[in-house]
Length: 340
Image (cartoon, rainbow, N blue to C red):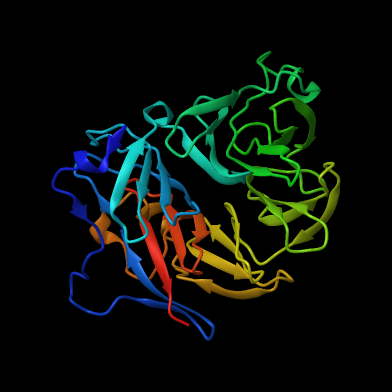
């Protein structure tokens, strides 16, 4: 683990606009934000790989999970900042290359992180400082994973994100594997599998990349970013299809704010806000040039201020500001400070 005291010659990303102009402003009306790209004082020893996940704890600390750039001296995949963007600590060398889903859950007086590793095919529960609580691996208890594929190999398993129910049940989306959702209780004991199919039929999923417990209604529901199908799909907590929602292109994940707004990072160069009825409020930083897959491999100076490339994770902080992390080879963390 690298702590703040070990940081040498920090690179203050996003401290100033190169041209000296004002920072970009996105949105309108009650949803207007000032954008700081490359937010946070990143130590010189750490170079971001693809920035995949972001969340905030109860102290206002921001956690960023990334795959680690090949030129990075440190292999730590988790970077933690204070609310002002000052580096606090880093850890997580074991997640290099596979760092993906990131969920924070408050359990009693404590908070825990739940991390999906697509490379090793595991979900790991840790403390906020990275101490492992337990790990869930291949879903060998599920009948869906017991039938070999056409090549005689076990079905692929590569979990991308997860959600946690009010009773502590864990729902893990096998987004890069067989497109099922596997449900476990809070002790990590297997309950059921649903989804899969990789068709557009209701109840089927094709890359359940993101997943969240939607608590905005009277009854909690499981909301899935059915990314390849380019839709949102609701399930009951027992895994039964409920309904669909739209307003997305390639949804990656979710976060919810206390006013009912739903935040959706969309891989096709935009961040979407939906209201409590899942109606589109607006799309933030949308770049409709269609060049995002080309741009994501370019140097940082090629990125266009105020435009997103491939948003992969996003979260609200407790004040309603938004943090966005992107699937770009050199990583990018943007803070959208709410100004209206």
